[in-house]
Image (cartoon, rainbow, N blue to C red; front, side):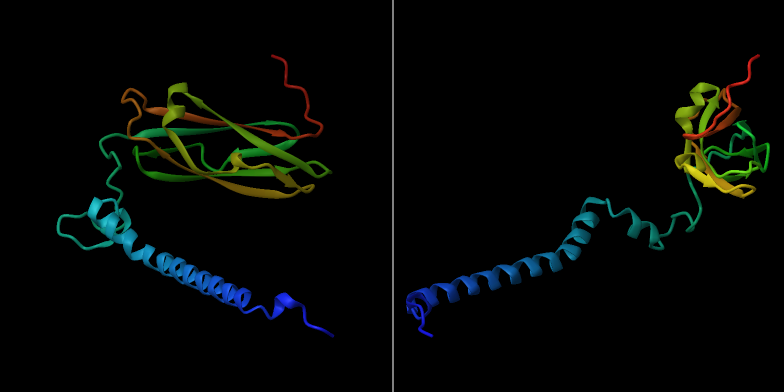
Length: 195
């Protein structure tokens, strides 16, 4: 088998070696830059005072002890009432009817659901708030209303609602009602009851 003329061309071989050398240098510079980003990021955040996590973890005289939420407004108490409405033949209710919380304090309430039908169903909950102005200040961190669920016949579940009430809630609001309507998705949802 004969060699092709361009395979033995010294100028072409030299150009290829030079290109490989440049690519190796560029790859090494990119790796070095990526490796240097972590200390550069720490230095910039510390200089600008935005390195919140590491500053909070340091033991500095005058800082609140770790784990204490300084955003809790202990000067007032909000009663949160829980309501459950089911559009369909299933059981749906909160484990507790109400809870008293301070604004800024995290709270968890469980909701219980049981599919009493003889068929599998998919459903989802939609929240509503009273008074309406409370909606902007009711922050749900975890909620079953974020997802659709499929339950087998007779299957029971418990789902949490983890929430924090913003301390900016107007002072005249002392009670909030969180109501969920649980309805079947894409199934045989019964008509709304007539009143």
